[in-house]
Length: 341
Ligand code: SF4
Ligand code: SF4
Image (cartoon, rainbow, N blue to C red; front, top):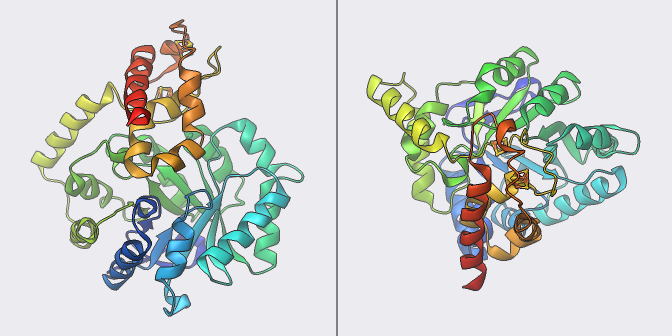
């Protein structure tokens, strides 16, 4: 499969990466089988995170005996301080059973507050610098759901790779962040290419993403056939047909009223409800085992959601006009059903 030069990292990566979340749901031997097959299909880029349950370990198992240099491995840590960040890098190395990670992200820098902490004295970025100096990590990266924060992080020019949600319903990065990444010669990973499971037509979703030659989506897949389908699209890039453009418009209209982009503009909520997490609960449950979803803090978020007073303060702040209080009720009903099973 075609490889592209990934910005200033100089790495040659395939036009698709393998996302590391859904393999958490698979048995160990099945996860290794899927990963090996995906690599056999030509994908050389694997993206995981310290916080994705046993994903790093499963990747470690799958790549045993392979030529390390032929793979590009990315991981992440969401901690804010230098010391714990360095501990997480070591943990990633042990779990993946490698002596370096190609790309390491500051994970989920979703607010200016978190940005100041991770980039400030004693923050996680210092840990990343140290890990690069020690040869444990090769390239600097961050991930963020928040466009403004992502832009500020990019403009620091202290990162080589940005990972940001981008798909046919979450098109915000198209305007500014993708051109900025090109201008700064940064690698760009499109997180949530299927909008966290909201997009059912994978062919159309990847047909859309294939129009951006410098962007590498990292779909999380559980079955090899899913990756085969995606690769067929990404290997046969052509302009969108008028029918495809119409279909995209229809999906945007349908999902536009209910799809949370996790941008965070609705905050602050007087009840301190993490609105984006609450509204994303179905996609989290679709992608990972319930115990991990709870460990990631969604359980607490859902409990917090019960304190919504329907004050509607968040409504006017949401640029997508989502009916947040009623969506919160729907998500709570979904959650109660899930945990009662
Ligand atoms: S309506 Fe609910 S979620 Fe929105 S600001 Fe008020 S309490 Fe928070
Ligand atoms: S509810 Fe609206 S403002 Fe809040 S995170 Fe989702 S899309 Fe953004």
